[in-house]
Image 1 (cartoon, rainbow, N blue to C red):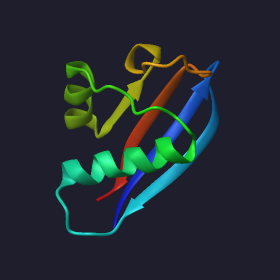
Image 2: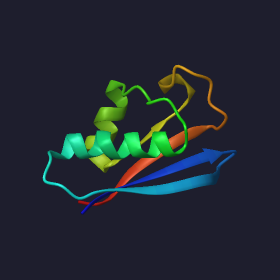
Image 3: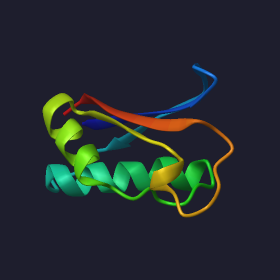
Image 4: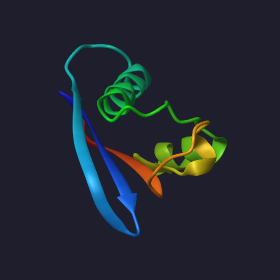
Amino acid sequence: MFQLWGKMYQNNHMIKDMVACIGDDDTRTHKIFRALDQICDAWNLAKPIWLDANIAEFQKRAKTRFGQDHFIETIEFDYLEIQIIEE
């Protein structure tokens, strides 16, 4: 079971968190995008834009952050952090 942990932070405090679970045999990349979609849909957020720095950090640490620069709309928090907790 693939699990992606989404955490929303404001003023260095976690204000929301959610674990999205994907249980099929799709590719790792597709599982990441689908889990992120689940988290964004649950919190009524627009999908963040992946920049090269996000991709590199995620490949290295299985974790990355999305701030205001990654969203088209204005966000009411400082950043969204995602992290793989189980593959």
